[in-house]
Amino acid sequence: MTTPFRKTRLFLCLLALLIPATGYSQTQAEFETWLTDFKAQALQKGIAQSTLDAAFKEVTLNEKVLELDRRQPEFTRTFWQYFNKAVTDWRIQKGQELYKKHRPLLDQVTKKTGVPGRYLVAFWGMETNYGGYTGNIPVIESLSTLAYDPRRSEFFTGELFSALTVLNEGHVQLEQMKGSWAGAMGQCQFMPSNYLRYAVDGDQDGKKDLWGSLPDVFFSAGHFLKELGWQEKENWGREVALPKGFDYALADGKSAKSLADWGKLGLKLADGRALPKEEMDAKLILPSDYRGPAFLVFDNFRVIKRWNNSNNYALAVGNLADRIVGRSGLSKSQPADDEAMSKADMKAIQERLNWLGYEAGKPDGIAGSKTRAALRAFQVAQNLPADGHPSARMLKHLNATHR
Ligand code: CA
Image (cartoon, rainbow, N blue to C red; front, side, top):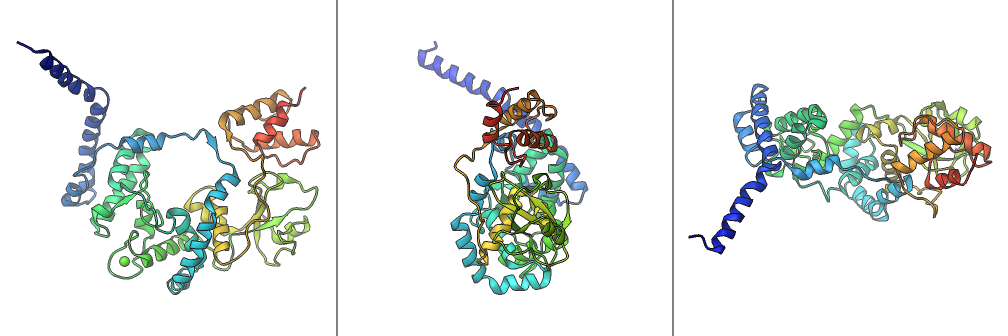
């Protein structure tokens, strides 16, 4: 005879059997099948069986990694929102302290690679708050998950092979091999393929330990930047002042001109002095609107972007490096009406421009050169400074304008 209690228990048992059968365990099973196949390939590529056994012993499909990979932020941060979060007083002060403390080591790295210590410290600060947070997701697990997932499978499969090679070569203990959700490792957040290509055993103990050895971290970062083309004698860029009536279309971050030519167009350093008399080409960037800072950027700016392909990132690294050696901050500050925009807002700007007769192209929510040119034409017609910078403020202007 079945008691009500036993009935409930039976029901719960059935439920427990049913829940994992929907979706999750099925995916997990597919993952296991994929993994078996991958391990066979890894073995063929020369990864030791013992490395594979240890590396995958506790690996499961990590749902959190998939979730983070698919996350689409609703709003794009403005330059100011990004910059003020990246170059904080704490980061500047800590960077100055650590720069002093590690000066002898940093000088050795500069001698070897040509990269000044202030940049090495700035990258270190931007990537992991000076080694304070290097990520806690097991790298083999995050990379296996992303390699299995079809979205960017090819790229992450390559990174997974690289990570196994790092383990195979015995540079790091498995338990220590943790990183960001996307598999970036150690105090400077190298992806495994970059680790294999650029990591250096700075303290010459036989291991390239980017988690625990600062000489290894700094020599590796310096080597990486040097290999990407760091120009020893050059800065990353300078903040500049634009003259009245300047043609903002030139601030496209693409057109290279000599410093002498920029000088002829009326550009000066932000503090009012003339541009340096060096024979260098530079590009002009206006990351916010006409009220914000403008920058002339040099070749090393491109190198910084190879680390992380974002103007805002590179501007923050460059400025943090400057601040670490006591140079001044930006000459402008965030205006009160600086507001993040959603993709829908950006589309609304494009739609409104089109409706008003300015050709912004097909509204796709991405501010390309066509959108900027259309916005500049609108601004000229409205007698506004024609910076072509789409913003929440401009959307309001557009919405208040009628045909
Ligand atoms: Ca070492």
